[in-house]
Length: 112
Length: 112
Image (cartoon, rainbow over all chains, first blue to last red):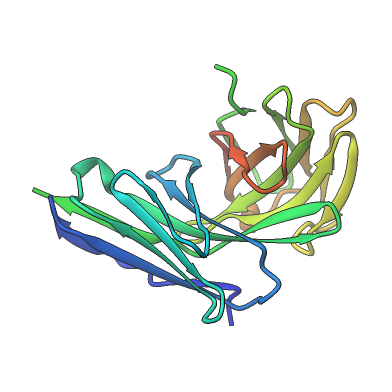
């Protein structure tokens, strides 16, 4: 079983739609959680951190459910510029190292 | 630009040749990470430096791979006797906290 699992998609949605991505992780010792965005042939860029209390950044809302080991990302009012791959990331801090463990990513294509 | 930089951006090499990549982290970040990403997958952790000390290496890092960070600033990743399976994007990330990591543009390696 992969440490971080995501539906690879693609999710094809019209502009203005609301879309949700989910992610599950297997290691209950995971301590930090993030969503990264990656455009085609570019580096991953930090989108937002994820907390149990939920957090919102404009049109983006992220949520963590530690009991179910489940992370979600909601994008409201999708824009064409949101088209990208969204990577779910967990961090297990072992000693001083904090290795990011990535899912395979969920591809989003927003269309007119 | 004060972000993470990597050089070269692209490298094409013949099987059996040695290659070296360089990463310059964000200047105040003491933590530096190398990851490898293949098509359709999320990045995978390779190795971690805190200042000049290499504190962790992945099992993915075979003995053909070596990384250094001699003065605690820039880092190099060398691959000896390259194989076609080494073709990938090699990503460098830096961090001050270990949790939020910021990626460079990557070096895309093609082994022919």
